[in-house]
Image (cartoon, rainbow, N blue to C red; front, side):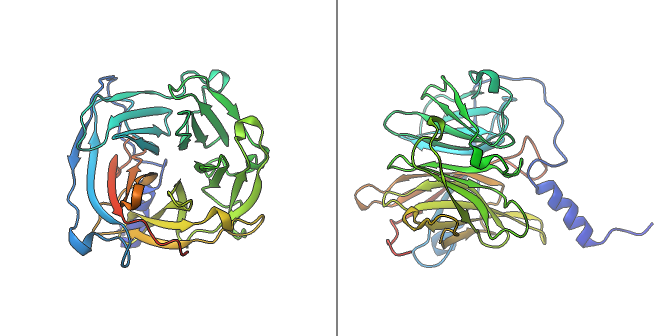
Length: 332
């Protein structure tokens, strides 16, 4: 029998990397223990830890997260503050835990238990919060919906904006951000067609759940990359996390780009500039969640990035990255 070529094998392995496809582990016996361990991963040091050119972020830590809890994993969205993080999964779960080096208890559970008739909508891909009220907004793929929760994850209210109605079922609101001025940004993961000049994107003048009508624009990421999350910097600009999949050798990569909401124009691509790329020798995985902390009084920013293991897909894990980045110049 003729052996398959290396290219065919590489493509097959790449399919195993692709989110939500094949080669999942078998279902384990149910376990609801509230515990999680951080396993430190090796990272480069010195200038080799920098993900781009001079002034770009430096990776300062990487951890694989493991738990026997059968609801653990598949984390696609990330929030962090005061030494803690809260992450949401595309299986409808949440993880609340202390950041590495901090002490505290771990909580693993269901995020959408109070979602009423929308309880079946489980594919959480993005999250953003109001630091004053603690309210949380979640972007859900499949139904192209936005859910608003109170700080304790109760009181779910849901909207399916008309402007998101025709977004792809597996390429919906992958990135969702409440800006400091109360506006909301939403980026679709995928373009509507191969002819499109970019992926659809929305700028809401207020809370989408309250019926705000958005302005539509486009986001055209670097070739081979798709947006997976975004967070606002203290100076008002937005840092966007992008995911790529390499074929030879099969691997995930990630990229960060910086964009200014003041440069959004209806119907036009949103300008951005590249910050850096997470590629070998850095720990690679299916990075989907981003958070930015720090930056007060000129202190460096801390970037946290979390990966989605897609419920035990081959070669995917739950990884948390930490990067340090001096507050960048306001030039874009």
